[in-house]
Structure formats: structure tokens, C-alpha cells
Image (cartoon, rainbow, N blue to C red; front, side, top):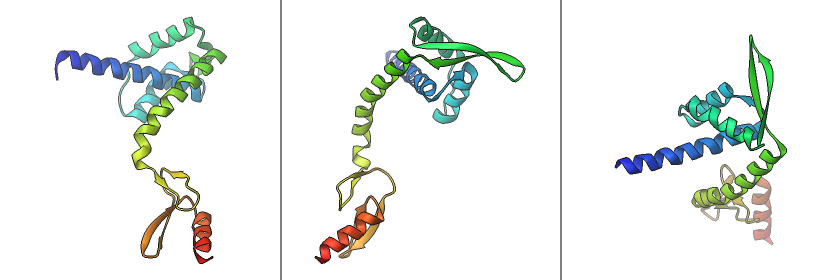
Length: 150
């Protein structure tokens, strides 16, 4: 990869990291180390404190995050949480991001043969007329079978 592409990927990951920090804060108040450890656990990648703490400071300066000092073990730590404006921003970002995600998962969706709802994972499969048929649940499978009998 060229150096320019490496920089682009670094910027992309940095933006994703910031987005994910917002996601963690949306889940509830966190201190900086908690953000770093949750990020590592869920994403499988390390995130640098030199990205986390300045970003939290930027969010605070923009009125999107506030912090309070709380005792965690023996130490006092800053626990960050989203303000109402920060929650509104996250809701807006999540709505925009959800449309991208829906495009990505669309090929993985199956359609319930009875009600037409989209089934991402699991669902209920049953052989009907020698063909495996997908349903969202057993109730839809039963309704489908009953409709076929009528």
C-alpha cells in the first residue's frame, strides 16, 4: 500500500474510533480507561489514550460531554457522560449510520414466507413441500401451513 493510502486508512480508523467512543458514551457514563478497555474488548484493537482523551476534551468544549470526578477504587477518575446535546448528536449519527449498515446486511437477510418481515439471524426453518422455507417464528410457520390447507 502506498503511504497516502495508509494515511487514509489511519484517518478512517481514527474517525471510526471517535464514532465508537460516542457509542460507548451513549451506552452510559465511562471513564477514559473504561473506554479504552471496552474498545479493545469489543473491536479487538488497541486505541491510543492520545486519541481518547483529546477527543473527550473536544467533546466537552463543544458541550457534548460533561464529566464528574468519582472515586473508582483508590483513585478519583473523571467519569464522562453525554449531555442532552451529545445524545441528540449520537441519535442523529446513528440514524445516518443505520442506513449504511442496512445496505451492508441486506444480502444476509431472509424474508419470512408468511408475514414478509426481514429475518437477519436465526428465524425458523421448516421443510414444506420438500423445500426449506424460512419464517421469522413458529407461529408464522403454523399460519403458513394453515393457509396452504385452506
